[in-house]
Length: 52
Image (cartoon, rainbow, N blue to C red; front, side, top):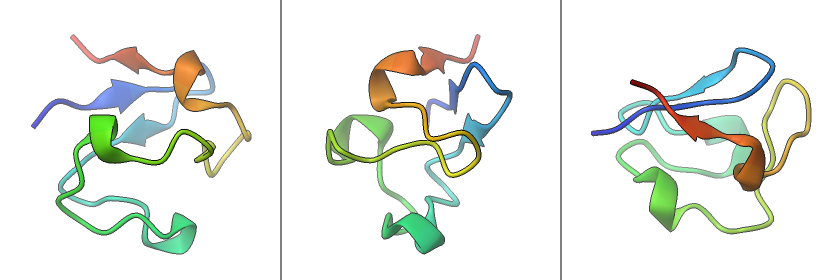
């Protein structure tokens, strides 16, 4: 699965999800609710970029 990088350096890994943020492991980035924010800096999904 594709990983996404926040401007603060946090990497969203779908295999891990964000359990503290209510995102189950195995959840693709595209399926995360639009109101989810980076657990480190509070950035929105729009601030994330596909990790190359």
